[in-house]
Image 1 (cartoon, rainbow over the protein chains, first blue to last red):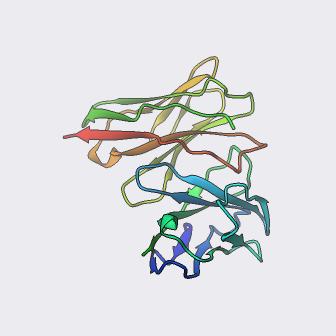
Image 2: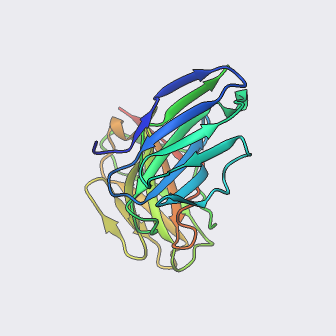
Image 3: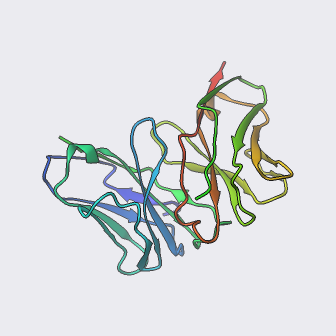
Length: 115
Length: 111
């Protein structure tokens, strides 16, 4: 597709369950970002990939959160033992490279609700 | 990471110009100034970016102060579809990947 694609668009899960959120970046983009956004707030940085490696995962809130990008394209954000506080919109974005002059393109987000 | 300061909200009339300010007093020489906006229930979308010179594109203009400690996003004729949260962010080549967003400015457009 032409843009960043995220699936599922909506996910409702029970507290304690495991969740995976998928991101398909724009073809050819080497940089991939995950953000989390709570209601009324700006996006909060979680992790950045350059190619297959996580160049910066300092935004991951705790060890229940993990993300992979094994082939340098699709990425999966994994959340273990979900808690109600994990409810948020999870945004994925990509850019051609991590260069600061490059535009970042965002997906529509995956809305996660933990009940 | 260098931070930005924006007003929480602004209001404009339709068809009138809008000037959205952003302060970034701790900006470094290699920081690019980016503006994104987020419409309700959508991901942020790119608006414009610049380094030192003023920039124009089909969506908006970006005016950068000479000392680069502030910038202004200019929407030349606001429409109802421009009602969104506007984020001013700084990106540099060392921490550009981290790209920290603030709370942004919520723009209300009145018909």
